[in-house]
Image (cartoon, rainbow, N blue to C red; front, side, top):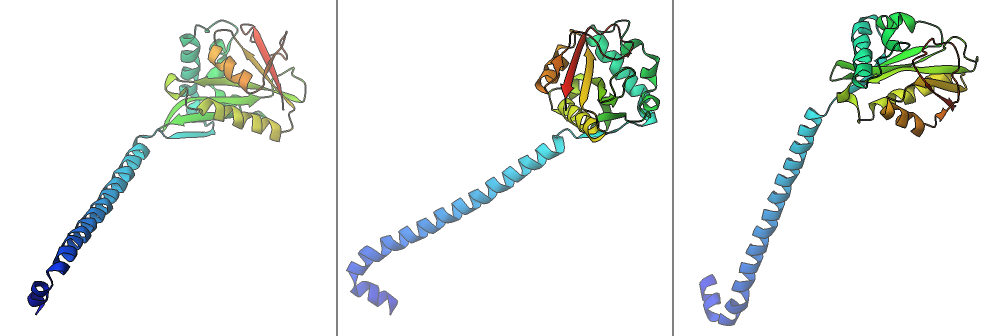
Amino acid sequence: MGVKIWADNPIKCVFIIPALWYICGFSILISSFHWDFRFQSINIAAKRFKIMINEPSFKIRTIRPSDNGSLAQIIRTTLTEFGANHPGTVYFDAATDSLSELFMKEKSTYFVAELNGEIVGGGGIFPTEGLPGDTCELVKMYLLPEARGKGLGRSIIEKCLQFAQDFGFRNVYIESMPELKLALTIYEKFGFEYLSAPLGHSGHFGCDLWMLKKL
């Protein structure tokens, strides 16, 4: 019966057959786009997963006694790297080998930075002797090369400044050296301003640049 209808209506064939071809082709095209979209989605998800797997894992925490050896080595290695391993700096401080004990002092703290579980540096706040009561010092800010340029130093400084503010300090002081140009640039961005003379009695006569930030 169907064959007879088609045979009896050749004009219908002229219009209907191309229409069927068009509909079928359009369906195949849509299906193709659908699968292409699904494959692209899978691809994107796979790439994102790969990035997540390979992305460095950073962690900032407070100091532990077991960190002392690693931190002392990082501080001295970094100062040597920049040619700033002078007398009158933390390079020669006995306390550099026992930072966890040093930072047990009231109103002090030291933040340790880890990269994929390995210690890569740190920085802290300390109420240095001789400073005004409303002023503390940002101290021992050092990072290994692999930890630089990733915002980790900035995060440590932000934590230090927040700690200082929480403990009622109104000013944060820094002692540094011209050799540490990268660090100086970061301090400037945080609003630290240069002083004409040192504050307090840190004993670091090898540092000839001094900065202060009001909180």
